[in-house]
Image (cartoon, rainbow, N blue to C red):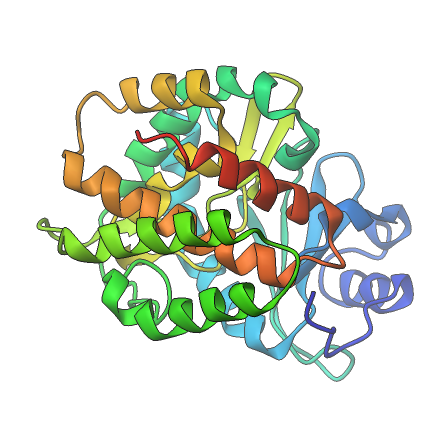
Length: 301
């Protein structure tokens, strides 16, 4: 995990809430270490809210971006029965905290990573509905993301370097690395998305899903939302599900995507897995996700 650029303590968060939201609410804060990601940290605020703060300068613009796009996306997801991190207050930077931060609706549950893959099949219909709702939302003036949702060719150099690093390490077998490289090359070979850029989540994996056992509660972390190739999100078929769940997920997308789209989706899943294999030594849950995803990637859509 990248190191934090700022120290986020209870005192820091309580002071922000006290100054900008409510003095009384500041007394109800509790940390949730299981919701700390590469980019942001989350603190629960009372029963129904949470404070979401970027822990790195690189994520600050993403939080401001999330504040701008979530009104429309929250409505779209709630309409199909899936929760989202509705922003109820967009916190400004101040003298004690240098980045924008948010107060969002809290969704009770655990990170999807904590649910066994074999038990995630029930998520397939609601996750398919959520993706259809996201992809159907007008991108408007939402800017493109330089690393999420573009053509695979824009990441070719970076992924080639990461695959080369796996080959020189001792943690991934030659066969698994060859599989990831082959799937990436197959995605490059089928060409790009032929439709208009769709709004995509941009970071869809079990760590950004909230669940209560077999029930999908919410999709979270929208700092990478951008117009692009929806195949980037379809990679969740391999990152989230076992074969039965994957078939159900694809079936509930009602034939909206062509075979070539699924080839690109599998390539993006291979790319994400390659990244995790090289960078998850201090995050056991993501290391497990990477190993499981390699096994799932042996199977086509």
